[in-house]
Length: 263
Image (cartoon, rainbow, N blue to C red):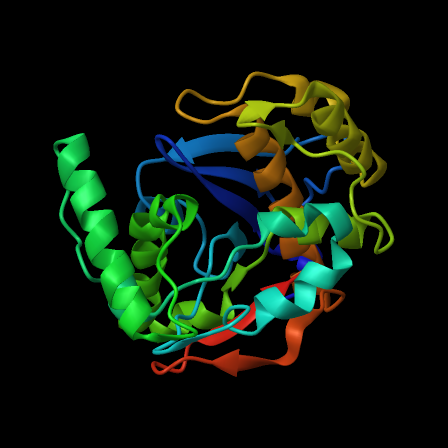
């Protein structure tokens, strides 16, 4: 089966679950019809259930967890940061699997959330060198990392279909290995100029500006939408053999799950 016959999916975590941009066969961005589509799914399993079994998914989420965390991250993080210049702070290190699974409760109060963060940080410090806690940013996506992790452990066949990428690495690679000049956000708020820079790049790779300018689905933010659109392009690069893994070849975690950022 050729890339033109495969459903390509770019996914990113969002407030409502997962936002996905889908390119159906014959809907590469430059084709007038059918156009790419965008939707939100409550879980990653629901997203997978909605697409064919041979679809290629590139997702902005760490895949493959370390048993022990070294300085700089699992390996992929240290390799891609130098590519990104001022954008390299967007790549943060992933703590150990034990830290990620230290507290898997649904949090009903902010106090419980902070208590779980402290617990995860304590475990992270005992499973890292040098000892390092968990950032609030990383902790905020722990549940989504676990979603994919548990699926890839239970369903090894997904490991050849679901690939980790990273938006800023994707934008850099799509921009001729030149990092974006402007940030997407400044102090937690969307930066319109940075968003415009990324939309223009996505349009150079075939997206229609009307598609990118539409309001994101309920439960997703505008930057989530652009990130998912970039991930879909990386899915196409993976399907066509043009994408590069960092590192090359990928590493593997204790469950045999590949560990690499693709772009």
